[in-house]
Image (cartoon, rainbow over all chains, first blue to last red; front, side):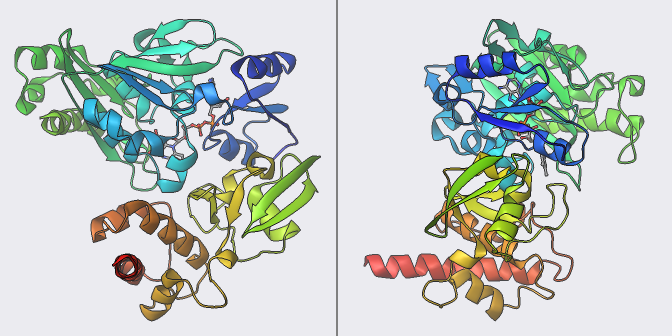
Amino acid sequence: MYETNYHRASSVEGAIKLRGDHEEGRYLAGGMTLIATMKQRLAAPSDLIDLRHIPDLAGISIDGGNVRLGAATPHAEVARSEELRAVCPALCNLAGMIGDPHVRHMGTIGGSIANNDPAADYPAAMLALGATIITDRRWITADEFFIGLFETALEEGEMVTAVTFEAPEKAGYAKFANPASRYALTGVFVAKSADGVRVGVTGAGANGVFRHTGMEEALESNWAPDSVAGADVDPEDMLYDMHASAAYRANLVKVMAKRAVIAAG
Amino acid sequence: MAKVTLTVNGRTVSGECDDRMLLVHFIREKLGLTGTHVGCDTTQCGTCVIHMNGRSVKSCSLLAVQASGAEITTIEGIAAQGELHPVQAAFKEHHGLQCGFCTPGMVMTAVDMIGRHGGQLDEATVRHELEGNICRCTGYQNIVAAVLAANQQMHGATRQAAE
Ligand SMILES: Cc1cc2nc3c(=O)[nH]c(=O)nc-3n(C[C@H](O)[C@H](O)[C@H](O)COP(=O)(O)OP(=O)(O)OC[C@H]3O[C@@H](n4cnc5c(N)ncnc54)[C@H](O)[C@@H]3O)c2cc1C
């Protein structure tokens, strides 16, 4: 790892100021991506601004159907929250499938969505739940937030402070985990609410996480696992690597969508 | 340079180190506690698992300064008064190790897992929870058996004590 300087922020304002003072600095949340990348010398921030000790960024609050997750909430806390499970169990289940227990104890939802790894789990849920990403300066819809592979709408120094969404009537997540890393080789999150059905797909798209409107329409006219079977998933739009070809991923999208609908019930 | 203060296995310790020093290196090199191992360097293998403020974490993926102020428990800190911790005893009894390299991380993972599940552990849960710990000798069978046996012993024992 290259040299770096560590700073522990105790407030959002303090962290923003520190970040502004260090052009080559980076926010540090769970470090489950950033520290690993620094160890490989693929990232070399001059300064790290630790967000884990900022009380305003922590925790889950639920008000009726409205859910708010602080950016620094670790995956393990999302997975075991009984309050969240009562309104959106699919998100608890998703968080419990991320990596392993040690990764879940450190990794945070804010870090995961800011990083927007094409194989990360949360982005699919954020899209399907129609979530809003709250930053230190604005509110961004998930549709506008996730732009491409490891790319988001975040500007230089902008910090995710929370995500918020209305609990859906039903939701489900199914992922085919990469057998080595446990990241999503393909993961599909389906959510049904009064506004309609939304389907978020991760791990598969050549341009990162995406919504599948064909499946959304099919499920809106008939909410049943088999509705997605006829959907058109073009292998041209899929990622491919040593783990799975584009055609295989295109098929997995349908299989995972079907399982997600079954999980949603 | 950073000043790092930790409570390690109940004892307060301080030391100076580079901001970039990983917690596992601080534990091994500054504190001389070499039970915590370094295996993969890519956050995958789990030989470096310790507890920070009561939760299992991979100490190879955490800077020592990030942990400053925290309570740390390492494998050296779990046996009370020279008696093996029930999880250690179960690993011995059930032959949950061969070469032993992954064992400290396995044991720390098992202690955390058993603590979090309040006695409600089955084989499938144990296997899912062991996803972050790699063993290249045992084929996991005896590790799973050891965790389940320790779980029963520990929760059985609590029930008895409560009666
Ligand atoms: C072995 C292993 C397995 C994993 N498996 C999975 C998996 O199955 N599924 C999955 O989805 N993920 C997986 N992950 C990734 C894990 O979920 C990470 O925790 C997550 O991607 C990053 O979150 P973090 O809090 O650790 O962020 P960090 O690593 O601290 O930061 C990541 C990036 O986000 C930025 N950042 C962090 N917080 C904020 C914020 N609030 N505002 C703006 N920018 C911010 C940082 O500057 C950095 O660029 C795995 C990781 C490991 C090591």
